[in-house]
Image (cartoon, rainbow, N blue to C red; front, side, top):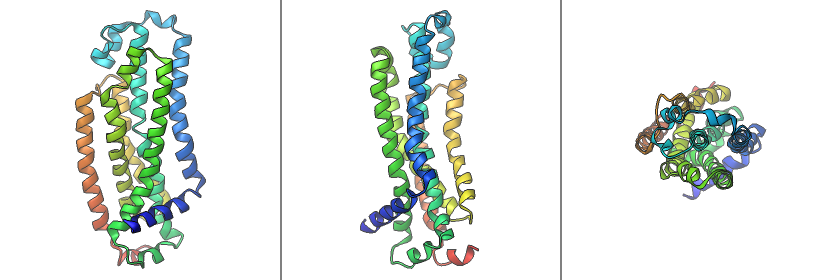
Length: 263
């Protein structure tokens, strides 16, 4: 465990010197926070114009959540559910840059050779790099979501707040989100250990975000309705993928030959 902590501290000391990484970790959560607040302010400004909306049409998007809600409240639930879903993207987007750089970036900077020469095992090495990428992403996501929840408490009605902070969304943010973060990081580390260009590693790792984007598009267009059952199913699928990807990352990381294979 001490070796893993050493790797984590080493990764943080190196990657946070990168301005792109700092921007992603610090400012991306602020953008995700600003979007729902700006949307609610705009909706309240045009509340009179929204009174003509058909609650039945909104029900097609949010299902039974619109029962006993007026048009404005129904619209708020629909919009805020989308933004809550977007918070699941944060622990996936934030660590990709860190994880993609973790192997191939060190090879490029010639700092990987002495690291591989140490008695640390491949499992400890990769777990350290994965944790170094996941922990900041999960921390900023939880912090941003907590601020988001406080803001919503003051900006929406009690009924809307309870629906937006339903248990399934809490599970999505505090359980499924970290699992997805580990999935993204393990995929990025796996890709990073097989390519020779940090940019290529980042671009390939970005495909991990696609499932979340598809969920958001499907929810916004009314093609799917994300409910507690889907959140639990997504969590189980991601958990299985985590185990598979971490195992593959360790097995495919050929530490004895990787330095001679990379040109």
